[in-house]
Image (cartoon, rainbow, N blue to C red):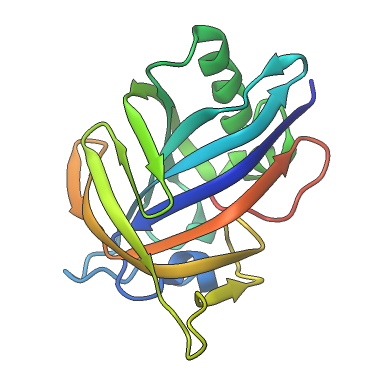
Amino acid sequence: MAWRLKGRYVTACSCTNVCPCSTASAPPDNPDGSTNCWGAGVFNVREGNLDDLDLSGTVLGIKVHYPGLVSDGNWQIAAVVDEGASSEVADAFEQILSGKLGGPFGDMAGLVSQFSVERASISYADDGVTMGGTSFSYEPLRGPDGSATMISNASFGFAPSFEIGTAAGTMELFGNAAPTSYGEAADFEYVSESHDHVRA
């Protein structure tokens, strides 16, 4: 089965400043000194399909918990499908994000110890998102020329190059509440046949 997802995402996590998990596969850097990274994001799927099933115009959320080094695995992942999506669309996203249909999520499946699917009301904007009990705003860091600060070729990433910034809000993840601190955003394109590295 062939699939493709293209659009833009906004994510946030509990790490301070620049998230060491995605940029260097270093231990999480939380303000409270804990070693868990809690993260959430929303993907605005502007174009997409699974074979003949159209996935365009949908929004998809993700919740993540890294208990230590990202490269050590033991990830806890929840895909959150907008409650307005059909059951057929929800099933397609479950198959894609679980790694059952290959592509980048298939490559990462061995690092995931717990995977689940949830339904919730989701909204997306380039400067902030809501997803069930999670809500945060996003503001990119800017360089001297006013453009967004970018990171490329990170150890783990949702895209080969992505903006970094700050996020303000709260995440509700796996029975825990965590404040957001670090944020990132980028255009994305994921396909089943070939891909650049991504982080889930």
